[in-house]
Amino acid sequence: MISEGEMMKKYDEMSRQELEALKEELSKAYIDAKGKGLKLNMARGLPSKQQLDMEKDFFDTITSDSELISESGVDCRNYGDLIGISEARKLMADFMGIPADNVIVFGNSSLNIMYDTVCRSMIHGVCGSTPWCKLDKVKFLCPVPGYDRHFAVTEQFGIEMINIPLNEDGPDMELVAKYVENDASVKGIWCVPKFSNPCGVVYSDEVVKKLASLKPAAEDFRIFWDNAYALHYIYDEKPELLEILSECAKAGNEDMVYEFCSTSKVTYPGSGIAAIGTSKKNLDFIKSIITIQTIGYDKINQLRHVRYFKNIDGIYAHMEKHAAILKPKFELVDTKLTEELEGLGIGKWTKPMGGYFVSFDSLPGCAKEIVAKCKDCGVTLTGAGATYPYKKDPNDSNIRIAPTFPPIEELSQALDIFTLCVKLTSVEKLLAQ
Image (cartoon, one colour):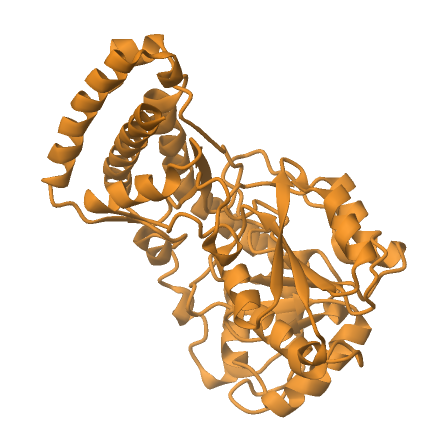
């Protein structure tokens, strides 16, 4: 609980004597928390058991051999339909708000499609351009804080990553344009445009239009548009995202964007379907490569998704059920952080309208220690620095909170420990200055 002294003053307004007294009080609470032997996890944005149990009838959708035939007459147990059955392409196109002709449906993972897209560019180039592996330098722009797995992909391929500040309406477009339009070694930008990971930012119409209107120095520059949370609303208010493929076409850049999406947090993370949306030129090039890579993806799972949801309205209705489970958890995060930390000057956090994360910024130089202290108390968080390329947060301040997986009782305990560790670490930091 916040003491009377804490409510009266920001930590940086306290005298050294007051800080030392507060440190002693917080240290006792910390030792007590360590002694409880808790094992709580807020490390990754996983759906909870309650969410997964909600879909237990999913695998009962297809019950006879006759139901395994697609609309076009393909037996989904057999080979064929490399780019996905037509009804699944339509479903995922509606998911992204684009025409079905612009879509290929792959396996269960959009991350896998993104990895393959980077790998394909490294080995084969982009639509006839020089393979990236033959270039002296390849660079990617990385809006930060951002998604750690994006950064891990480009790091594995030896691609140089450049931090781009993420503002409340999207990436700093002045800086993006400076790099993209003046440096031909800049080949891509990672974007999570709706309910971004971890900040929950929704790119504004102006930012989307500026991205679509870029004039890249490199002909093979591509926007990697990871629209992972397109339908993951938490509240009744549903901010919309301008559709980028059509904006790129209007600007004469129809080949400049790859859009990725999946049902990984709609149905099951391990058994969803994933898709890419892009121009005909890009699709034709991708098809020329994957026709060697595979004879086809899991059409039975594609058919299962279509039969389960029927259409995009079925997905919308289903996501309302997810929102009902997630909303109390996100509200609890904001309530706990507000009750324990507001007004103390030692942290700020986002209040997202959707997605799977809350982004927290501590005092500079404190994030690693907060995460370490939480771990000592049995609370696992995403590693400090993970939201930046090379795991190097220049301010050592950003922490990603993932409240979706734990039951709400465990989430409450974890947040109590988190706020305690924020307070103690902040006091220690101020005393050390």
